[in-house]
Amino acid sequence: MNASALYDDVADACRRAGDRTALGEGADRLSYRELAVAVAARAIDVDEALRGRATDRVALHAANSVEYVVTYLALLRTGRVPLLVDAEFGGSELAAIREGCGVEVFLVDQPRVERVPHAERVVPLRGDRYAVVTTAPVADDPPALHPDTAVCRFTSGSTGSPKCLEFSRTAVVNAARNWVEGTGMTADDRTLCLAALTNGLAFNTSLLSTFLVGAELHLFRGLPTSARVLRAMADSGATRLVAFPAVYRVLADADLPADRFAGLAVSFSAGAPLPPDVRARFEQRYSVRIADYYGIAETGPCTFERDPAHRRGLGTPLPGVTLRITRNAAGQQEVMVRSSSMATRYLNAPGVLEAARDADGFHPSGDTGHWEGGRLFVTGRTGGPVNLAGRKVDPREVEQVVRAVPGVRDAVVFADRDADDQVFLHAAVAADGSVGRTDVVAACRGSLAPFKVPQKVTFVPDVPRSSPGKVRMTDLLRLVRGGGEG
Image (cartoon, rainbow, N blue to C red):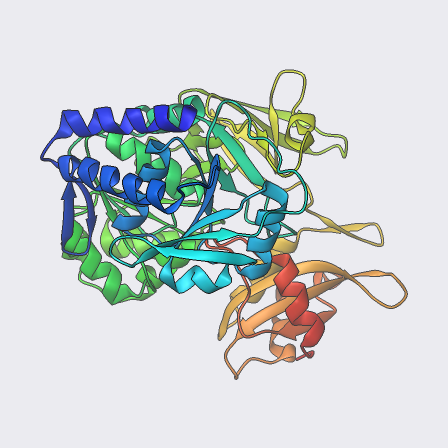
């Protein structure tokens, strides 16, 4: 089985690295030798909990921790395919995964046991922090996994049910090796990962890549306040930091001692655009660069900026990656990707991923862009400009203006329709109580053409985002439909 073969790659790394530190969480540590022992014990627990219940797939729904990594590797060791489910997913998303992916076994940490739909049996595992939850059989025959599949991850589900990406052992290993080679990762590196391991940013940059070179992976869970991140930096002695843009904003706004970041060689950000002002303030305050990195869920890591002095664009292709810019059906210059780490297909959407790729195997990224000096520049989304009576508006341009209004924490601008089915710009804004609709409109009128000014502004407590920072449009629309105009 490909799952157990993928674990063999980790087991080989454990034998080579021996007593070197493999995993850390706060002050706790596991050596590579101890990691292998812990995985073997957890695999026995899982087999015992599932005795008499044949299944080739198990959804792992839990927060980042050392125990999460142990449990993930234990599933691989037993030959079962782990489906890595975002810890933020709720009952409706788990129900869609259960039905669409034929999942009848969930392995969860205790806070998430109650989310599992149609649960019939709960078996706590040794230590009582995790439990195996088996459910009633799904109504239809479950979709068969591809014979090469070793692990599954999910898209964010920002516009509907999350799609389940199937990855082969070869794809997972290639993503890790390409990252190691492309970024110069060595056994002396200590990666502090503040991103969820269910996301490609963390999965590809921090997990197997760390183990392949015998380096250290330090995990973080909970709210990433500046004080807690600073403590994690001290505990880990990190040389690499992996985080989403929201974390860099917190750190850029904080007045932290710069010398506490002295051992940090590079930081990585992806998942959502990093505002230029956040990058500039972070780098100026801590003298640590945020490396440009571009990747998409279906293909793995794509580019990396190798030149520490370069601050424009998203870098050059990583090993095993080919990019090209192609004019799509809408006449846009779209970024197309082919890599040695591509997903095989969507388990719960047969044929959709395969049909999206062109005759040469290139996957459409959904991003528009161009080349400049051998570097990739992403300029927008293909769903991008909103057509307002023949005039094109890029919502991201308007969002930048709204986010700059004092008191605004976050904003999303999107195309909406009125009672006459006419398209208009709608701004959903999260702000403190001092900000009103007139402030938002005045800022837009002062910076943008009149037709780019949002016609409706709705204030929301927070913009719902997935853990990578992508907007969850289904949840946002639910909020604004029930909210009032400011």
